[in-house]
Length: 338
Image (cartoon, rainbow, N blue to C red; front, side, top):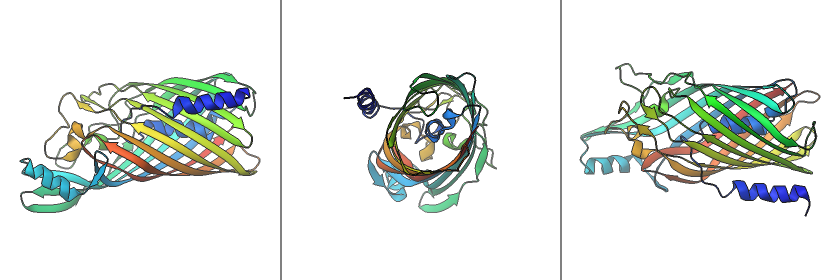
C-alpha cells in the first residue's frame, strides 16, 4: 500500500466516526468549509470568494420524530400553557465575503464578513384562538472572523497532491444581537445577526489527490463564549468529507458528507427566555444531524476563477426537545484566486 493510500485511509477513519458540536445546523462552519474546499486557500497572491447560502427550514422534530405545529401546541396547552408560539417556516439567507492573503508560502490570513437575512412565520395560539403570523425580516452584518491558516506539509509548491493544513482564529462581535420588534421586544436569539461574543476558532484540513479524484477532510471547532447580552450558543465542532472528480477539463463534480452535533445554548441573564415560544426555550437547542451534499464546480478557462453550486439535504436529524430543522439548503460561491 502506497503512502498516499495509507494517508487516505487514515483521513477517512479519523474524520467519519466523530462527535461534533455546532451552534445550530451549520453556522460559521459552512463558511470555513466552503472557503477551504472551493480553493480560496490555494491563492498565491490573494484570493476572494463570495458565498451565498439559502436555508429552508420547515419540519419540526421531537428527537428524531417529525411532528406538526398543531401537535406541539396541543402538547404545550395540555401542560398548562395559555399562550404559545411555534415556528411554521423559516428562511435564513447569508452572504459571506471571504478573503485570503498569503503572508508566506505556508502561512495565510483568511477573513470572513457575513451579511444575514432571516425570515420566519409562526403559529400563535391564545386559548382556543389560533392565528398564523409573519415576523418582520431581521437582517444586518453578522459576526466577522479572522483565521491564521498554516500549511504543515505539502508535497508540491504548485498543485500539491498531498497537503495538511490547520488554522486558529477569532470570531468578533460585529453583528447586532439586540434587535427588537416594533413593540420593543427582543427578537429570538437565533434570529439575531450577531452573538455579542468573542470566540476562538480552530480548524484542520487534509487533502490528497488520487488521480482522477481529490479527497478532502475538514474539521472545524468553534469554542463559544457568553455574549454581552448574557446568551451563549452551544460550542461548535463540525466535520466534512469531500470527494471531487474532474469530468471535463474545466468542470468538477463532488459529493460531501457533513456532520453536526449541537451543544445546548445557555441564557445566563434570561433576556431571551420565555415560556410562551418554542424558540425562547434553551432546552430546545442542540442536535445531531448528517447531510449529503452533491456539488458542481465550473472553472473559468485561463483564469483563477471558479463557480460552485451545492445542494444539501439531511439524511438524519435528532433534536434536543422540539426544534424546527433544515429541510434543504443551497450554496453558491464565486471564487477568484490571484
